[in-house]
Length: 178
Image 1: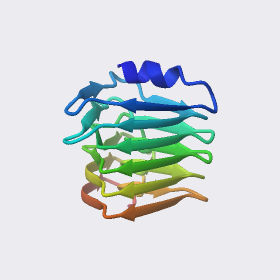
Image 2: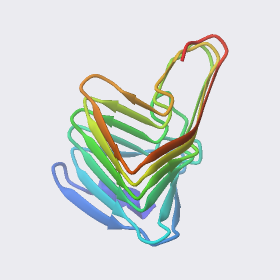
Image 3: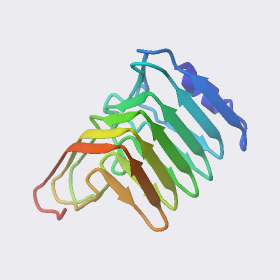
Image 4: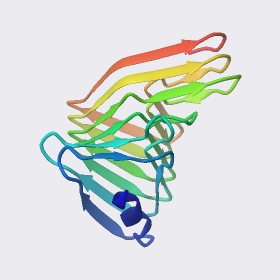
């Protein structure tokens, strides 16, 4: 989508503000959006817009001090990874979701691989959820352990939830621990 081109064209250390039409449904087609040392604001209005990972990829990886603001945006059907099906926020980066949602995130892993953060994985980073929702998260592993069914905070990370909810988180493991 055009969002990918705009994000990739943002020079390191710079900002980009993008407006997505209400009711837009954008598919990632198997490739996550990577924010590396950039600040991106992705906004919609009213009913909001959907960014669909199609169960094939995470929505966003933030690294090297990147920041992401989502307003009236739903991240749906993130997956295809073992850490944070929708968001992976690393290395002094930050994410803020305002009136937004993460829905239908799924981490399905065969074998003895561990799973970290069904919807969100934070490492040396932070996230703020204001009037937002994490819902319908599925984590399945046959032998591995599950750490943070909805969200996992690794060393030095913080999260703030205000007026936000988490619901419908399901974990299935045959031999691992939760």
